[in-house]
Image (cartoon, rainbow, N blue to C red; front, side, top):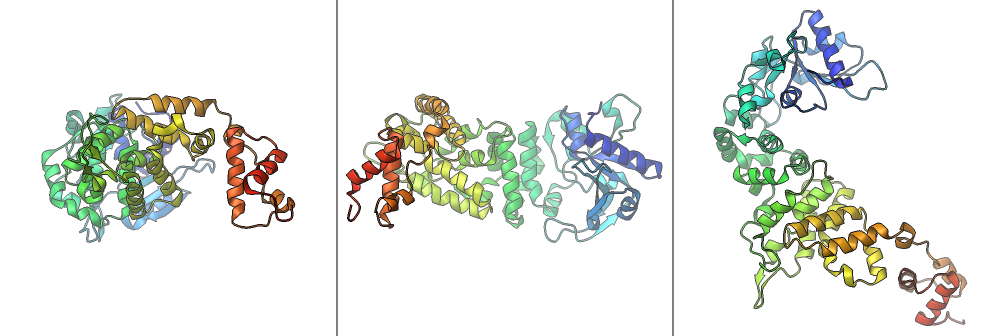
Length: 455
């Protein structure tokens, strides 16, 4: 009935210890939901009637990182184990003035009262891991109708939906993420509450919003997530640049699938669970520059300069959501280079090899494949690039330089701005297979740039 993992065993030991001391203790939240759905939880949380000071005193390795909200982290005694178990005291919360944390926490001995302050019914289930029955559902304490909603495939706020979302605005995005992840629907009253409060999502920190969006993009149901964001009036609040894709027509001879929004959804549909966040965001943003560059020319619809505009817009989105510099560089590179595959069959050898040098070129390949499959389904450019990239040895793509500035100085050339041009030209010739030795490189420089002064 339960997974044989160190995380579960640690949580079970905590429950047993708390029960032996006369306290109530259950597994709670997402781990219970996932077990009932036949999924393997990555961690296990414990809910208990024991107050934080009692929990801190009962276990040898504890961390009071959230004790003022009733949460203590308990670590295994074995130092090599690198996980912790969250142990939360039953509580009822006061008002949430900041839309994230309760102004006051009141501990309670009632498990039911604790459940009633949680977010969604499917996350409000408690599980008695010491229950003697072999039936998992028989070991469940369900005070909010979570079992019925799991069976029906529904995400429903516990109690009054607007109150739950006013307490923590991030719950609006979490409702979308859970519904997408599990293939559930959001219960109508819960959707209405999200629409009513959608503008308040801006009170959530951009980092927390970014993390929720990234999870939506990388959990394997990205298209469904963004359709739900749109239906819940959240898309235009968190990503207005994506919302503006709707209704932006594309030339049917290249994009028979429809407008930019439909095309982007078709890319998102191809993102596999566990996709990197940079590939996922690159897929989302690759055509973000199309809406502002749309024009109807005499021959067809055009998006002149949409790549350059898209890079600038993507940079602003990455800044807004506080991506790391490394993450930003890769997302922008994906946007900047996604149209270059149309030229791969005609690139000079040096240009193609430099193209292959792009960091994480496998992501560029993956994005182009999704882009093609979401439009004309022509994979010829992808196949050409894929086959040559896979067949080309690393030393051919990034050969050791034949000469450096040191050899140019030794040959009598004066250091200056032209050195960069000289070395780039030498590398081009090397990548083209025109030259292969240092002597040939110096001769190439003399023939192309003239002899060194006095040479």
